[in-house]
Image 1 (cartoon, rainbow, N blue to C red):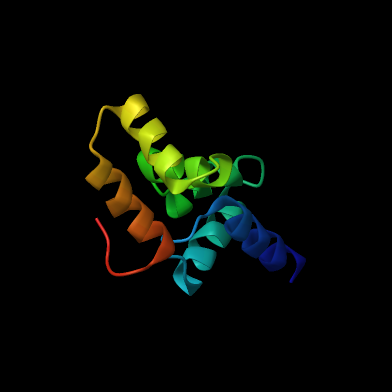
Image 2 (cartoon, helix red, strand yellow):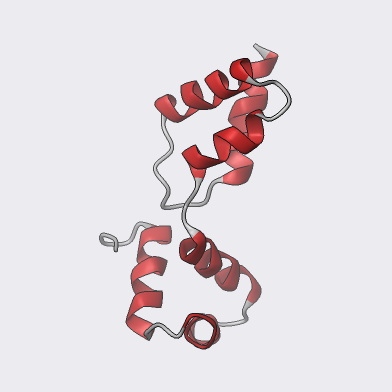
Length: 99
């Protein structure tokens, strides 16, 4: 029981909104823990990985004072468009589809 709770807490701590997390994710993470008790977090990270750019958008939204500032920082860092930023923001906030 404690292992399940630890795995569930780890998933919550290491995933972001917009990433599909379900019971199957918990089962995969628990399997990783059983397979390699020392490296299970490293192995399980693939099951909650949102992708580098999605994680960047999530971080920028937390750190920047405004969404516009976050968009500008995203564009300056990645060289991608403002539209790309807002598509990823939409995925994170589940407000009308995704990229």
